[in-house]
Image (cartoon, rainbow, N blue to C red; front, side, top):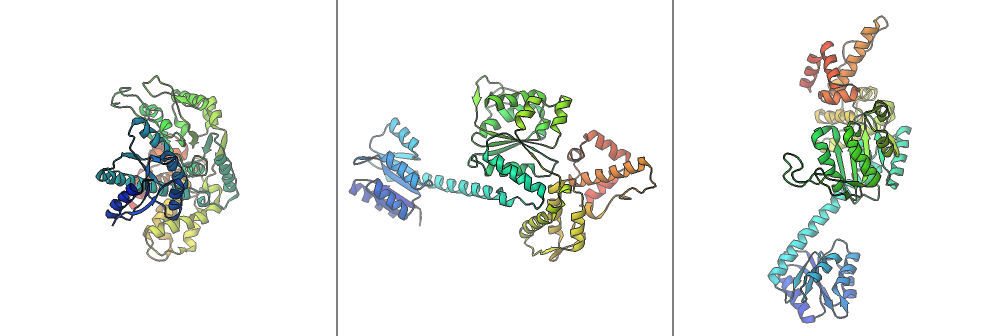
Length: 461
């Protein structure tokens, strides 16, 4: 039995009864009404999934009744029934919110097909609403875990940013949670019902960044077989996160600047000027002021982006946040692994709270996730933690008798191994954590003889 609820709004008693009996014969729960007032009362008594509304209801217009019903129940999917089939009627009905229309006298087979499609639309709308509610809850301020004064200040800035439509620049080391901050701002803003899209600029080949951001017309470049909608266009009504904006090539910075000034852009290979109502949030782990001074980042673009600055401190500068974050991640991954893990041993907690975390919150989350996977009891112990926390490079700290060169070598060795561990052995990510080029990292790995150690560490994991 199909338990979907259908509301019939028809002023002809015979026609109303005929439609009702046919739909009840198909297993639907059916209510009916002769006018708009009765229809609204029926909707309040039992919310319908689909409403079949006659175009002419005595002195009332079915268009007005559809508007009333949608105001009462925005999840409703209306269908217009009319004996006056025309393009104008169809357009007017759809503008009012009707999903489809059917011409009188009603063909019940066709009506059932339309209702089936309308119910599928209703189901998809419900899934979208659920997804939005889940995302909004996931990225709400109450899920932003912290205990430090530094992050309290960040939280206040996020609240201000959510109230505004101004551009936001989020700065901080890799793994500090820039993406989480951007999403939290979006879902707390008036744009929460619009899309949230993110572009990680370093992950794109330089030749494709422009088409990814602004779109491209068919034939704009080799392989462009059809028109491509860019992220600026697709994010209309919502928020676009430009992640690692500091890596954006200079020639594309001009196009971003033009958009921020005029809200206008053109697709690659096109001449039409397009507009998009999108809020821009940019994030970077680079020092943009230094990049401006060096000429690798435009000063005018920097000042356009830097309206609301949110600087995320590294985890090593807010140790107070480590215990509540551990608790949050432990509950999350213990539930996923279906384990009753109640806490950490004193030794394991000391290792976590004493670690410098070059990979910041992301590294901490990975450490707790691994521990939850390997834990066999109700308490996480040191042997459950990643090797980077329990095994240190030879002579972890330089002694007073070491030469300056030895001290530098040992310090760099420790930092390189930490960064490689935090990045999963990916040198490009480790280099960004360290603030050096990948070529320089490879050189230091070679001269310090760290290749075997990093391979061994990766194998042990």
